[in-house]
Length: 139
Length: 299
Image (cartoon, rainbow over all chains, first blue to last red; front, side, top):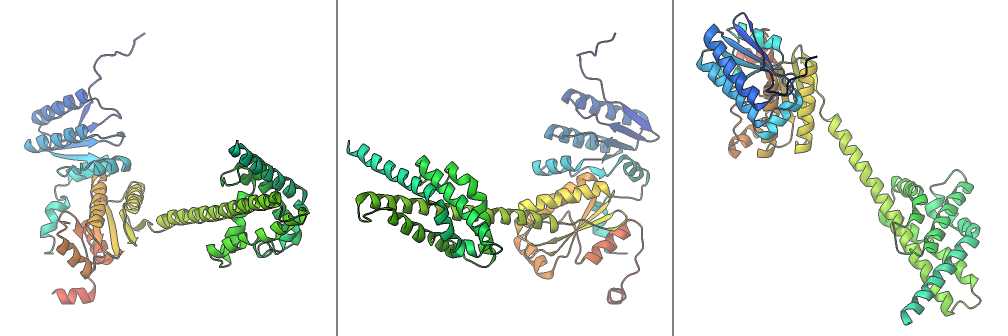
């Protein structure tokens, strides 16, 4: 009989799908695990030369300011290594809480689900409106 | 000593009034049934009015027996509170003002006082005087109870209508595959903007919408608070992975926004709902042929 170990929680797996790394966050994420994840992703991008990171947070009920900061930092470090980060599947309740907290995660690209996030990353033409909007007046 | 004598006199009077109310229940009810308050509400049968009056008499007798003459929350009133509320509400529906209803309740006092006076051989005796006074206090309390119940009913109605209005006023419409719109009508306060945000985010998930249009054509004024609510909704939708477009910005509102120095820089805005839809379709790669008038003026 194996007893569940009370030691440090197991790390979050990082899957590679072609040039894209896929991370599905568990419902409860310990601060230590989040930090470990940040390192794992950075190392994987550097090693494999991935061009995109999809973070699936559809199973996450609560995003606090710490996790919000970790996510923003992952996106910034990934950007330094020339990879784009997309946050996928945020729940309405989480979005409302984040907005009420004033954490709008402005540097991050978001998508409705993993499928759209993958499409967003695989299609180099699709850019987020911030960049497009200014030039949009000319047809 | 004097105080206890005084109290004893009070108690005796309350007891006398209780006895009187219980004994003459039938006569009081018969007289009240002809009063405008009951006659106009129970139009179907007089017996029904008499029954309603008896219930009120019983309640008054119980309150008097408890000695809680001036207590509008006395348990004796619990049984008739509902009925009184309905009676007052139906009077209010036929156009009576609260003051008129209060007067009608006050009108119930005269017939019962008359009956009480008839009980005494000498109507000017101190006991008679005390009993009439006690009854007057009791009837005053009844009047307060009716008014309180009526006001409560009114407040409940207002609250229910406010909730209904809130739900009715924020429908989320699917305009196209992946495009939803919320036409906002009326003042946007924090409670409403919360409802708008919630229903919009739910719709984004349900319909897998990538574009959400907030149409503020029906919003009379935009101040910094309304703008803040809009920005919050836009930010929440963005976090979900949908892009928000604010449309229906009338020239006057555009000027107000600029004058107030509100920064909507990060939000895509369009003049009309049609323009916003065209933008969203264009972003999805669907080419919309320009409207002839617009195209002519542009080229």
